[in-house]
Length: 450
Image (tube, rainbow, N blue to C red; front, side, top):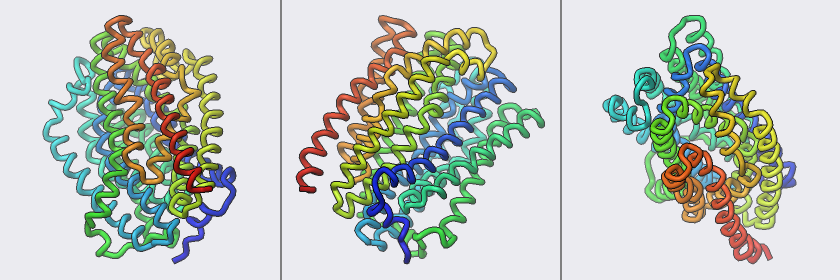
């Protein structure tokens, strides 16, 4: 089996390699984020601002189930990267087969109760008042497509672990472009409303799955599975679980955050505040695409070189990724501080939403220049298979700091306290991550590399 692409991770110059890995990842994330952004603009202008809030209510439920695929993918891909670095192709193949089996099992098991208890789930996540009915329509249809999305997210991380970032980019672009086209057809031309938006998303997930399925059957992939590799092996499942749990915990915290935020903001400001949060949330996904791209590009480089015992290259990868990500995050910060009003007007003509959102956006992005430390630090520990510190750092920002703050600060500052919680939690979690990362480099990478 030829594995030239994966071997490049251990030989090419770090700066060049990071750009090679990060640019396709960034483009893929950009297109995916543009899809979410434009989808929200279409929904807001063609259906109404309440529809934006409805999608925001559904997002944490579908996001968490789909995140199972991502967590299994990231956990397994860490193993695959290190196995390829150590030239252990047997373990890489067994891991991939187990990833597929686990993704199918968990997503299907979660979707069944998700459909049975829809009327109870939606209000819990903030789908109250006028938001409930459109949220129910969207949720019910989108849930059918979540297994395909989970498999796509799992497969995407494996493709990147093989050293094939361009194919990973294509896997992210296909559903994004398809969703926008289908949005226009179903919502604008066929006037299907929320059902149209939901079917556009579901069918786009299916198209993504078909592409990923084709990739692994083609000669492009190094991972050629046989039937016996789908059988779960306890040591591999445990390793996937321990590392994947880091990603799953992060996505679970994101879903819990949406739950709390939607309910807190609904109580403080009604549908208007929930809609403002939905717009800011879309910008969080979109504006930071280059920083997320650097993080995604960094993961296989760190994992492969750690598995190959090339610790000096791991240190170089950390340093280079931090520099690139910090520079890009600063550019994002400047843009959002200058143009929040113009950005808000793209989504809605609702005067109340336009009045509230820009101030919220400035608060939410106030600490953006320093987030590179959080992202790269947590990604390093996950890439090299150190599950406990990776988990702790993943939970630090939202679990240990942000969620407590959104319950405490509004008691003193009202709705402003909710928005203030974002930069405060960013600063605190950056300090913690920096301390962990500095200690790791000093005590382990430097000593081993010497």
